[in-house]
Image (tube, rainbow, N blue to C red; front, side):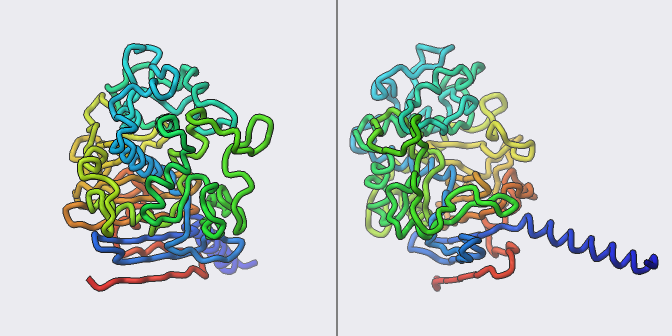
Length: 422
């Protein structure tokens, strides 16, 4: 082989490898829905909801939106607060039926306000989701690793998923209702949103449109149930069955994943965003009072050196500065403080909402109350997304947050746009 032919062959191989690497970092699907107080303004959907079926993604397809589930759970809590069945500042031990106390601070009550604002003193080091159907959440709390030994409840922000199963357990004990069914009755059904926590409460027709979550190689990670509801939507029992009659109110608040298991479409998220834009009212339906929305969205913690951790425990260095203001399961963006890198949109506007990231998915729901606008989005198949250019979010999130959307997707992707005149 001549040196010229060798150089040409080497260049060709390099180009092919570069193209393969580029494809490996492309999302499998992206959906973005923009809205205002009056309704949906723009819909963009690209890529595949299900690779094996060749099914294009749509804005009404349900996806596991990860931690945006926390914000939706908080809406359910505030509905029960308005009904007088829960109180944000009451000791949750009373409803749980057992004492929830930081081992080093046994006299300090832990409340729903502390749990929802991640100031309870809990961590995720002992786990939070792998509890069997017939298990009990309190067994995790007996593990010393579940507690931040250095900080008392109410003094420090540390984002911990474990807070939300405890919230769900309190909700169940207050009502006697299973968490997923309770959330359907309190929030989802009144708003006409066909969604559910961990699939059991969803109709088969909704489950048939599930968006599959993939790793970087295209292997399914979640919700690859081939157009049907999964055989078991929760963790199996210790004897290997999926008998939901074993459910007991408050015993296992993690069962339906209140911290991340909501399956909802981008259009459903937009309806929730419009609810917040309307101070608790959307399309003539009032679900919450303005005071309840204010209680949720007002920051209960603002970062100062030493008063909290600005990233999840397992985040890389590029993720530091992600959390700088936090309410009751609601983030506030664009904090002007040293060490904060939470300006996703790059324009200094203090939007509220929540982000999600799990199983190769990135998601967000953000509203700008001053302009009366918002956006809901998700991307799948991006577990190793590149860091953002101007924030602690990823580059994909920075792109999806602000129009125009220009995310490269694999061949065969389908885009659907629907814009309402304004």
